[in-house]
Length: 368
Image 1: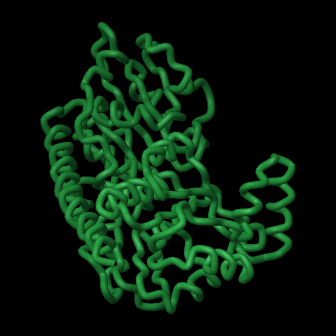
Image 2: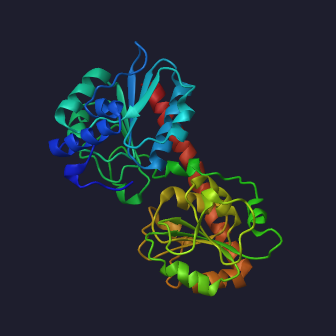
Image 3: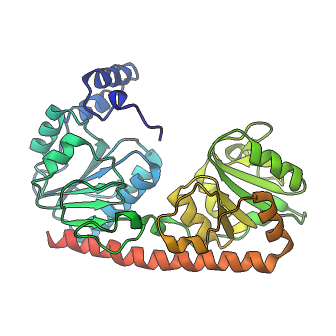
């Protein structure tokens, strides 16, 4: 999601920014979002302890928060669960339809009145922060809270909480930290129908490639067109300039040689990850990285991409000349397969640890 200047943050504490956000939502007839912004929220059900799960705006963290909520609900039928988020993803929220005593909706802003109001209305017994951007007044309110867990936060809270579940080794010096692991690895599809490659290629023998790019300047796409004119390229991230086709509008017929697809629908990524000869990350995205590694193809990264764990460098080497690297993978399939096997091995290592640590989190909530 696009970051807002602090004063324009619709979930911040600046009155002008909040007034603008309220006005925009009222024009869009999103009155519920205005009410949520000011803390007019209520847990579902009348009895039971409240556990509040606070997610940020990024799709991957909202999805993780939903999966943690579902796992907690299986273990604890007596508590009331509340999920708040900063961006709504209706397709994922449908997963919560069968959860009793569970409410979800937009998060309150960080204005002191909104924070005080939602604290009074929730009286949370426990709070779980999942990838949320910590804001000053909410954190001040949580400091005396007995049960606070953090998952995948990119900064230190400033006070000791009950348990820290970090995905980045740079945060490993915190107190009460669990083994460092990215629980988003659990969300990747590890077993994928292999027919995607046949669907794209039809009777043609050609290579497929995946580029996750940071900007739409098109330099890497132009270089690819010059070097791999007979192949097909999938681009996620920023939409490339020039002649590209959105994969959401693809008719599922084999495209022409040299075609470039912009992946505007993430449902295709597991199939792409398993079908390509190689993937390159020009910018870091945890969920895409794990999905690419699960696919078993060779992966590389730009020098600017910092990995959350040092050992991942074995699976994601830096490619200073991407086209030369991809030509090597094309011409030496054994080396490409070996690199892909390394990525898949490290993916499964992370996934197994993530399953153990997430189970520990759910068990901790069960003991509350």
